[in-house]
Length: 189
Image 1: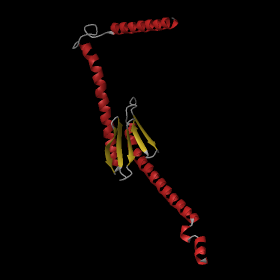
Image 2: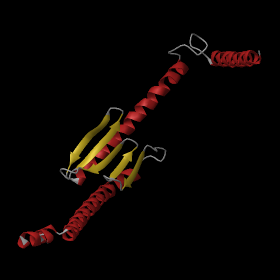
Image 3: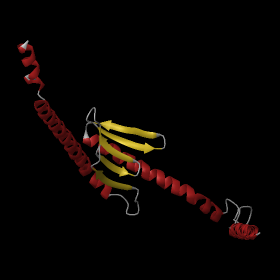
Image 4: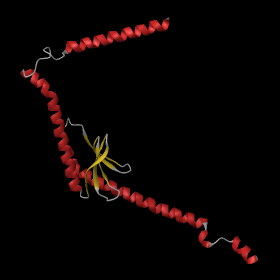
């Protein structure tokens, strides 16, 4: 019976809590080290892409402020191209991904392991965006150009002019003042 009691008093050597804590700390340190190495690798690869794109960004027109090449060391690290698009490193494949955020969610525009291919695709995206904006600006200026050439009626000939806008503003201002006076008068009763 004493042999049974002695075996219960002593824990087995493989079940030492102190040893288990030490092993857990070592495993965590290795995991953190790998994670830090992975993150440093992501940032280094995105810096390579940034270096590829710096010449492209130097060619941007000085008045065009839509594009801004910024490397943000977040998790995951991102190389922002404009307000909606960025490049990152895919966790699963390790490839560069070019992503656009929109109201419908994130959409991958391009993915490749080659930095030159991704830089070329980003350059093409930027060129398309510049052309799209030029087209929109031209479309906005088109009605004014047509009215000067006589293809469409002048502002006083069927389209609301400045006098209509001023009259609408004045009516709104007077209506608001009358409503405010009525509210004050009713609250005093």
